[in-house]
Amino acid sequence: MPAPFACHPDRSRGRLYPERLSTFRTAFQRDRDRIIHSSAFRRLKHKTQVFVEHEGDYYRTRLTHTIEVAQVARTLASVLGLDSDLAEAIALAHDLGHTPFGHTGEDALADMMAPYGGFDHNAQAIRIVTRLERHYAEFDGLNLTWECLEGMAKHNGPVIGPNADPRRHAGPLPYALAEADADWSLELDTFASAEAQVAAIADDIAYSHHDLHDGLRSGLFDEADLMALPVTGPAFAEVDRLYPGLERMRRRHEALRRVFGAMVEDVIAVARNRLEAAQPRSVEEVRALGATVIRFSKPLYQDLKAVRSFLFHRMYRAPSVMAERARVTAVIRDLFPLYLSRPELLPPAWAEDVARAADDTALARIVADYVAGMTDRFALAEHQRLCG
Image 1: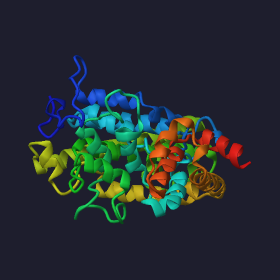
Image 2: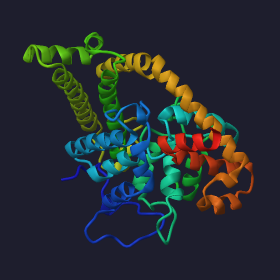
Image 3: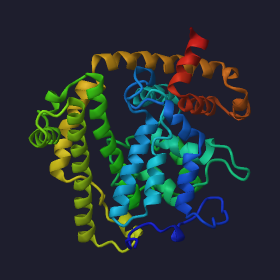
Image 4: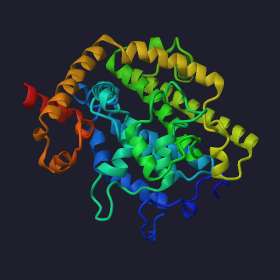
């Protein structure tokens, strides 16, 4: 039985372009399926999470990260009486706008796009599902439901207004998001549905867990380092108590799955308490609460800040990772101005868009769409072909 504050597909605000209802799938299930079958989703398999693809077969890619986020989102939504299909759809779409080389590529492209309205991967995901996926006869994009678009736009909280996080949303609204909001208001000044909030916290849980796995595999730190940290230290201590002398890889897995479980259980407990206190009777009341209802407890949040600080210094800013960041940043910095000055180098399928570009800003946004859509391997190959 869905909770009264859950999104219900039969009460969806619909799609920008009306369509006949499916006989056997809800509106949110169709959203999920369209995202899975999109070109942008397939490209995630060759996009960086932390380590560039060629550095190892076992590291997470942007696709495997997305699948893990979706799994957590479904679990949380099911337990809390939310619509798990909508939560899953938002989770599956949340990283569609990522560039090649992960946040490194995004930083480089944002810098190159600064004179043309900037670049933001969350806004780019909206641009992909509303404009750039071109497979349907009657519309551009995927024609997702309003609730799915809202969740993609606001899963990290309001984008404008007094409740927007100034650290995350400083400056003007990203043009890709402004375009979508102009077509169909996403109420960017309010909080999103509980399903979207679930997708956001699932992202935090997934990367906090798997970056520890990948960091250990890379050798950038070891189990002894994690035993000195909150959350991870007690998890290793419990495994050592229950299974003394356990083989290293099993010990690592047992400890980190306890870290994973602790995060999930904490979010569920906090969400239940906050929902019980607020007593929202509809999804509209969830949006109007003025704060998120799906979040970590304060003690665990502080502990995770310590773990993330450790990961930042020992993994994300490790010398070997920074050397690779510099190399792939150069790829974006070479390719973007080259395509901008010579748009005839873009594939023929992009020629019509280029011909319609009214000015330098419009052309730059087309080039950004093309570069952002590249996979790691394609960007490296194109850089080698065009720049040597």
